[in-house]
Length: 372
Image (cartoon, rainbow, N blue to C red; front, side, top):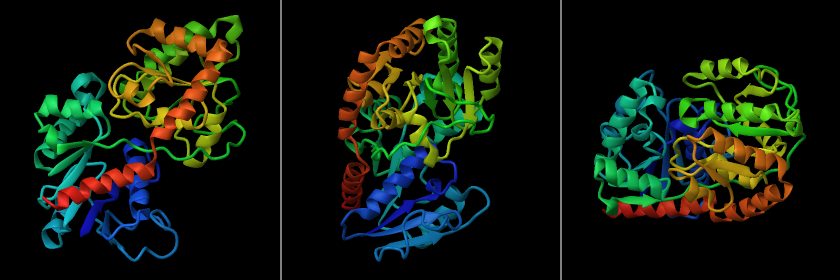
């Protein structure tokens, strides 16, 4: 059959979680031995070599259909009306208004229901509408975790028989280079040891509590020189986070290197004392697995999908409790045996996840939809 894939979110230069999922899954799907044909839809020509090296595989077609605004609901809808595939897969966005009856979509999380204040009002309204639309219209829905599946059933009364849980993957850790020094938007001097966060700087990531917890540790003699590195593109309310660090006298101790290019991530992970990710809500939490793969001990939240993904390979804390976050950070900074135990468990944990496994299970769902 012909499987159409909305690849528009995979083409951005600065990919975050959903864009990374879309690109890695497309790579893995195209690498599987399969009798099917694939058609990738993009809003304009993607960078050379993004989806494959050299010539396109014989069973893959690229449809570059540029459009200035409302690409999904206008241009992709028109394409679905004129030349529909047998099955449409939307991995990281919303189904177009016009779409084949056999459509599959991935819902990544419903965090806006639990923490509406962590989203801009317009974003929250769009997330609510698009998630409800996807849940009603898709023949089958992929959820990143059991937590997200349960949220879909509870919040939108989705038939559980129409939801399939397919975990994301994690790539093999590449050889690390020396830690970054003097790179990034603010030209910070990143030097070991440091706590690390990687992701968009936005309220849902709970970074104000992380900074407050770090402030309680920064004055301790045994932690003199330890830094906190908050890496990622600036999201909503970033300025208040920067102001908080300055108000607490942490200039030079809390660093904001900005978005870190994919090629520099190995060095940044490898130099970290520990990875700190007590997010208020996650549909999956891909950075937790990335930290595990690079042999970095992890502190994360005890809510949403994070215990499901981290297993026993992380310190789990109440993300609302600054004292608990600070205590866990102190333990990680001062207990070498604990760090080594978490590193060992993390390297074992990542064996449960791969993009090849994600692709095989996703393809099975697409084939199931094609039979409907």
